[in-house]
Image (cartoon, rainbow, N blue to C red; front, side, top):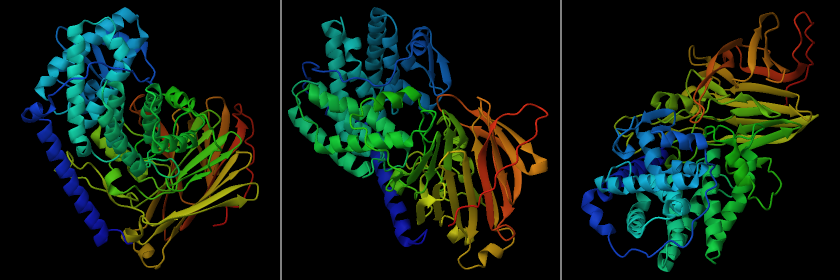
Length: 587
């Protein structure tokens, strides 16, 4: 099907109408006019408290006690009034505040102080909640807050008086009833899945909820069927979504057992499929590959989640439905994006990363994508989604996908992908002493009449990656049009790796922190070192370098390159070893 076809336009119109309806519905239900609909009997007590797999940080706890509130790199000092009455520095900061994920950090300090502070902050929010703040009552934020409150209930409620206990139960009940009504007004994808997890957690945690537990199980099963792919990936193609979903699903699965209920077959199957995919997406540094909206997460979270992997099945070489291939040789690991963009409903965070790859050697990242900045950095967030922010090709400074950038629709649609590669062909096979992967996509076919083909081969020793980027014009004519065939091949280098250009040999030296040295060389095009950036929500943005090859298709329809280990960095004055020669893989 051609990009921009009537069918594609129809999908975009249906998505826009649905997004507008959901936005309108949420604003109506979140208003004070609807508050009376969430009144009613209050459950007597909480029966269980699900575990929280996310780690507690004592530094964050001391900041909270000192009135310093930092989320996503943005900080606010609060003294003499409630943090919930403060003017938030950004919408994302407010999201994190009202989601209460930070509550777990209080566990890392003296228990009595933690309990007292937790009760004060929760009570302040309960008093604040009468304002019906739009961010505080955002469906996903409400779901995250409920999960946090239930999991931290032993700390919040320990030694509390009866009056606070009833206020807490009344607030929780109101939030749960609200969430049941607006569950499907949230955007499709991980936010809606988290809402269903929160509703199931609530039904298990509160007393006398058998009817609502049955309803919550059905809703959760439906979302798991819609969102978890057969290979265990998430429909958004975001590796981080797999980790986030498992972090909430595993405590829920355990909560069913604690209550003497069997989790559904759908839930068990989804978790069993997602566990191998989480290991699939891990690279040598312990983090997940940076594709489609994933940014750095604390490395210990993935390790904590994987500790619950009882099966530890064989690691797949490819994730066909998710659209990724992984090649592991010795201590070198390579993950390549070989998939189409997700359907429009799940593409709000998706990237134009087709045929991009990330590469690690041992515990160190070598070649990366640019990651994702703090959501407050709107312009950087849009830049991070382009093909130029990935270790792949861009044509005429355009991406392989087209995004909807409309300020009038941002609030209720987001920057969704409206066009991209419709067909991605992949071939994987043994080639000599290595594994060869050849793939091509048609993301630029309609605009420039070009197909990008990338052939990669990683040797079994993991000491050399050979590549060839080709530009194929099925009709022959578009590639000859002046000014319409400029290409750029990018290889973003991790900030820990030192890069220097060897002009006399048209090569680039990459020296890793331990002294291990790799060399990059290409047989054509204009080879340069340019500035780049590695963006991260948790660690901030870091300057780095990128290896760039510029050219024109009509002059250079194919570029062969290779990246190979040359040993430890030599001392000044030592001769440079001669590189070995290998043929590029056959397509």
